[in-house]
View 1: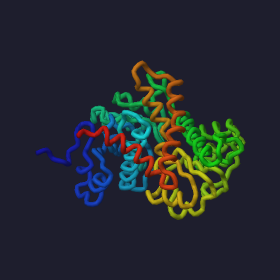
View 2: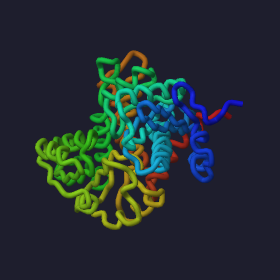
View 3: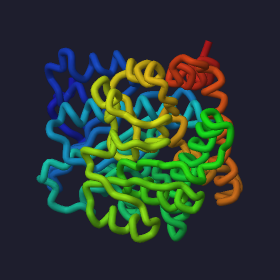
View 4: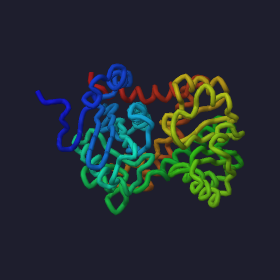
Amino acid sequence: MADPTQRDSLGVVDAQDLYPHPGPGVLAQMGDGGHETVTHVVDEPTGLRAIIAIHSTVLGPALGGLRWFRYPTEQAALTDVLRLSQGMTLKNAAAGLSLGGGKAVIVDDGSITDRKAALEAFGGGVERLGGAYITAEDVGTTVADLVVVSNTTSHVAGLDEAHGGSGDPSPLTARGIVASMRAAASRLWGSDSLEGRTVAIQGVGKVGSNLARLLAGAGASLIVSDRSEDAVASVVGATGANVVGPNEILSVPCDILAPCAMGAVLDETTILSLHCRAVVGSANNQLATEQDATRLAEAGILYVPDFVANAGGVINIAVERQAGGYSRSDAERAVDAIGARVGLVLDTAGAGSTVDAAKALAGDRLHAARPR
């Protein structure tokens, strides 16, 4: 029997080998979430520590972005990648795509000595999975990073046009958020117009900044916040948005709150401080717990589930992979259809949890695809 402590030439080890005594950790969390595979990619020369979580391949290969983030602990990284990969299954299923759900994180603990080499080592780990996981862009990574990853694996989506892809999917993700906001506005105010509506955007990174520009073009009034002063200054210069501090953005009076930064920002405490009619944003896993969807409904706040609203990027990637090649107009039409999907979720939910309704939509597709 092979020594479980020995890594192969690609530095790939199973999660249960990295955690010799997982207890309630890796295996328990995988079981609770229904994950198929968790793999660690380790490369000592570059200091790379990465985790790839494949939640489901029932509908197709697991698609999900690569997040590069400074986690406080490796356990925090594991918890994040498990939640994110599960969310990708729901997102891809609810969007009607023939793709499963996965995610990868690079644990930036300050030990990485060469970003390019680390990305290439990560690509080797992706390649070892044989196409079960397709990586893409996410928080902390760029299209240029994906090009580097593609040096060692073909299982990459969202490359730039020069390398056979469609480029940064962030504008399409933002477009889908606008379509979702229009569906919410129609339900709340009888019109899908966003003109004169006040939208507060938490986080003006790649998606949030594109969203701000689209909303300004639609006549909305903007309030923005981000920990990056440069990002805020750029959006203010382009849109004339008002600015509040990161600790204020969740409680400012507005019509629509758009969380577009990290997840778990809506919990039993922050929900009490909200002064909005709807929450529609691009951040993954915005709710700290599933019960928070019920809390929002009880507070009279319409919540559009993140995994429905923020599917524009993965829809764009699905169009990129279609037979005959990528068509921007096809991608835009498919992303605009998110609005109708949001309407279906709201109709199904009624006065109840919109998250439950959206999960039922995704669950029906997954159930139908499973072997009998």
